[in-house]
Structures are given as C-alpha cells and as structure tokens.
Length: 184
Image (cartoon, rainbow, N blue to C red; front, side, top):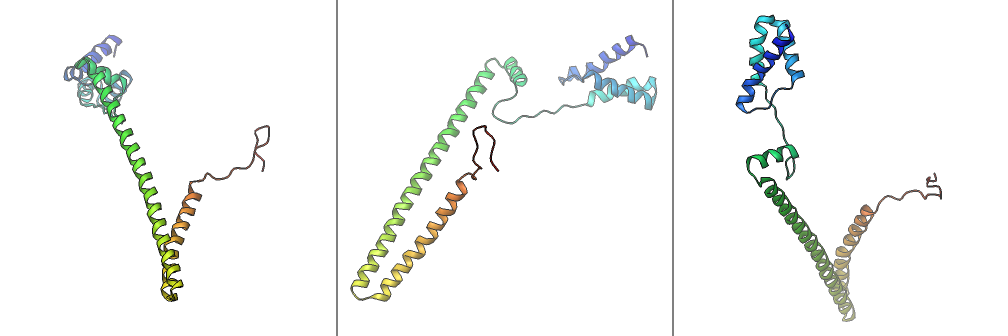
C-alpha cells in the first residue's frame, strides 16, 4: 500500500468515530489494527474491516473524588460556561461540610468519654461509701458485696484503658547517636 493511500484510509476510518462524538483512535493502534487485518484478510478486505473495527472501539475513563481531571473540567467549561467554578465551589462546600461533621463527632466523643468517666467515678465512689457505711453498721456481707461490685466494675475499666494506652503509643525506637545512625 502506498503512503497516500494509507493517509486516505486513516482519514476515512476516523470519520465515523468523529461524527459519533467519540474520541479518535490513536494512530499507532489504528496502524496495528490495519496490519493485523491485512495479514488475516488480505489488502482488499482489510480496509473495509478496519473501518468496522475502528468504529466500534470504545474508550472508558473514570475518576474518583469530587473534581474531574483538568481535561474533563475544561470540556465541562466549554459546554456550560461557569461549570468549572460551580464544581469547584461544590467540592469546597462538601469539604467544609465533612470537616464540620468530623469536628462535631470528635467533640461528641470527647464529651461522652468525659461524662462516662465522671458517672463511672460517682458510681464507684457511691459503692465504696456504701460499703464503708455497711461495714460500720455491722453488715459485713453487704459491705463485701458492694466492694466486690465496685471492683468488678473498676478493674476491667482500668485494664481496658491500660491496653488502649499501650496500643496508641508508637513502638519504641533505638536511641540515635550524634551522627544520626541508630545503635543496635
């Protein structure tokens, strides 16, 4: 095939996809398709088959996150002027909303934790004061039960807090000397 014929064929195969609004097929891919078809079908039927193959190729793109990639954002802007600014402001509002809810959740967790500790302390103190009162008035079995109840409530809480504190600490690293290398 002569170079002029190839250029004509390339133009004719790209025309259907351009009319349909699809992305043009990259030329190296189109040339590879033509070479494979010429080897399989022969030069006379390869042009027909190449046009059919090129017209059914699809291109799929996807993106994650609130903003599309710049090229797609530019296309939105060309279709609807101001769309890029609207999308950017929408992403900023969504980020502000997410930050607000995360801040609210952290504040709520801290408040609940504080009040849980306060009420737990009051209950434990009440049980111990009740145990002392019962021991003084001669009800040793009741005093023992109250102390046991407070211990059964406090000991697991202290153990869980201790385990959680150990998990949140970073692993200890070997000390470093002045040159920045670690000792073994």
